Amino acid sequence: MHSSTEPAVRFVEVVKTFGGADQCHRVLDQVSFSIPKGMTTVIAGGSGQGKSVILKLVLGLLRPDAGSILVGGQDVPKLGYKALQQVRMRFGVLFQGAALFDSLTVFENIALPLRERTRLDEGGIREKVEQTLDQLELGGHGQKYPAQLSGGMKKRVGLARALQLEPEIVLYDEPTTGLDPVMTREIYDLFARTQQRLGYTAIIVSHDIPQVFELADQIILLNRGELDVFGRVEEIAYSRKPFIREFAEKTMGLPTPGRI
Amino acid sequence: MNVVQQSINRFSSFLGDIGDRFSYLLTDLGNMGIFLLFSLAGLFRRPFRLAELMKQVAFIGADSLVVIFFTALSSGMVLGLQGYYSLSKFGAEGLLGSAVSLTLIMELGPVLTALMVTGRAGSAMCAELGIMRISEQVDALECMAIDPFRYLISPKVAATLIAVPLLTAFFDVVGIFGGYLAGVKLMGVNGGAFYAGMEQSVTNHDLRLGIIKSFVFALLIVWICAGRGYFVQQIRGAGFGAESVSRITTQAVVLASISILIFDYLLTAILL
Image (cartoon, rainbow over all chains, first blue to last red; front, top):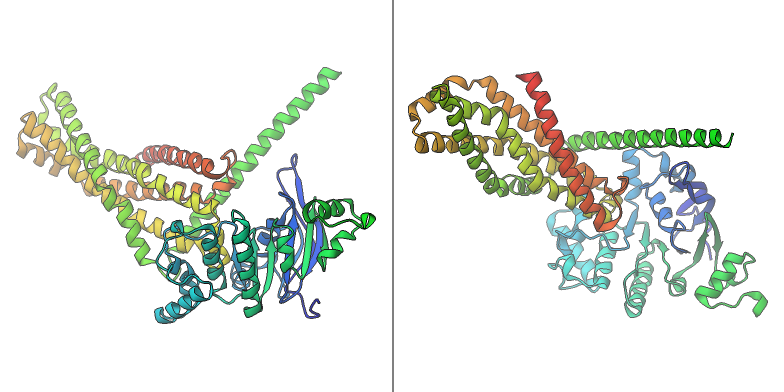
C-alpha cells in the first residue's frame, strides 16, 4: 500500500513542549513517523494531544524543541525565511474555521493566492477561479461574502483556496467541526474525489471517528506525547496498548482481540 | 527549621516569579521590536497594496475629520476664553493669538489628534488584527507564503504616517479658528492683533516640533495598536477568543495613550 519513494513528510525524534519550566507540558515526546506520498494520513487523538501542533510544525508556524521535520528532504525548522516560503508553497491548508477573509468575497478569497503568488493576469485568474468554483459546486456564490455562507460552503471555499497553487500536500485541520453528519459525509466525499483527481498527499487531523478513517491509507493515533501508526483501521483493534484498545472500543466500537 | 525552610521556599518562589515576569517582559518587548522592524521593512516590499493604502488613509484620516473638527473647535474656543481671562489680568489680551496658536501647534494639536486617532482608528486596527489572528486568517496568509507584514500591517503603518500629520494640521487650523471665534468675536479682542501676534510668534521651529511629534505619535499608535492585535494570543493574561480581543484592544488604547503623553514630554524636552 505504501509508496517506496521518499515520504512527503518525515518526523524524526521530534519533541515539542509548551508552558514554562514549572508547568511544562510535553505534547510530542521524541515522535518519529513518515507520511507517504499520494496517500491520505489521518491523525487522531483526544483534545490537547497535539494533533494540530503536528500541522503547525510541518508548516513552520511552530518550532520543535528537538528533532527534524523533513519536507522534500529539507529540514523545516532550520530553513530561512525565503526557503520556508518555498516549502509552504508546496502545501495547501484547510483550517478548522476555513479562515476566510471576511472583507473579501468568495471569488477574491480564492483568487488571493493566485494574485499574490503567481504572475497570472486578471483574465487567467478569473478563468482558474471560476473553474474551481464549478468543480467544488460553488458556482453562483463568487460574489458572496463569507458571512453569507453556511458552514459547509465555507469549507468548500477554504478547500478551493487551498488548491489554487496546486499543492503537493493538503493539510486539513478538523475540517468537519461544526458540520452536521450529512454535511460531514458530503465534505469527506468531496475530499476523496478531489484527491483522486489531483493526486496530492492528504493529512487530515480530525476527531470524526470512525467516519474519517474511511478515507485513511494510514492512521496515526496520538496519546500523551506518544504516537502509534497503523496501516488499516482493523490493525487498531489488535494493538496491545491499553490506550489503543480503549480507543478502539470507545470510538469505533471495534471489539478488542480478547473479545472476538 | 521548618519555618526557615518555608521562608527560603517563599523567597525563592518570589525570585522565580520576578525572573519569570522579567523574562516575559523581555520576550514581549523583543516581539514588539521585531514587529516594528518587519512592518517598516514591509513598506518597501513589492507588490505594493496601493488600493489598501488608500482605503486605510480614508478610514484613519477622512473618516476622522468630524471628530477632529469638533475636538479642535472646542479646544481652540476654550483656549481662547481661558487665554483671554488670564491675559486680561495683565492687560496683555493682544498676545492671545500667539498664545492660542503656539499652544495648539506645539502641544494640543499633535497630542489631542493622536489621542482621538488612537481611540477611533487604533482600537479598530487592534481589534481587526486580533480577530484575524484568533480566526487563523493570519496563519492562512503565512501558509499561502504571503508575508502578513507586507499584506496586512505595512499599509496600516503607511496610512497612519500619512493621515495623522495631515489631521494634526487640520486640527491646528480649526483650533486656531476656534480661538479666534472665542477671543475676537465673543470677547472683543482686536482681530488684527490676534493675527499679528500669531504671525510674529510662530516660527518654523515651532511648526517642525508639531510635525515631528505627529509623526512619532503616528508610529506609536500603529506600532502599539497593530502589534498588540497581532500578538493577541501570546499576551499573558489576555484570555481566549473574543474576550482576549476586547481586553487587548482596551490595553492597546491605554498603552498607546500613555506612550503618547510620555513621548510628548520627552520630545518637548529634547526639541524645544
